[in-house]
Image (cartoon, rainbow, N blue to C red; front, side, top):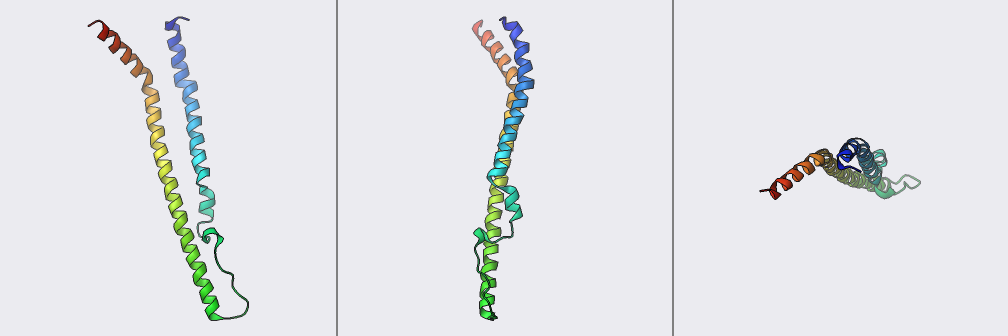
Length: 129
């Protein structure tokens, strides 16, 4: 195949099919991160006790036992909130870093044909100097 005929075919693929494939790939990465950090479940159970730890209230009325159980259950909820906040923070950092990598990747992908052409011209001109 003639190299002149190959250039438009490559450019068509580069800016259409490959670009859409990149969107799908990066969409899959964001989907993976969303489910890896279980963002919906973490938000839904944000105020739940950590690892379902806690004490059940005993039968009868003993103010000391009720207060002790209340304090333990409250502490487990606070630990749950702290741990889920840390998890959501890491998820947010991963989303941000992934967004930066994706943005740079798209920019590089858009510029690759121009970079290749300019490198070819600089290489050819360097040969004839």
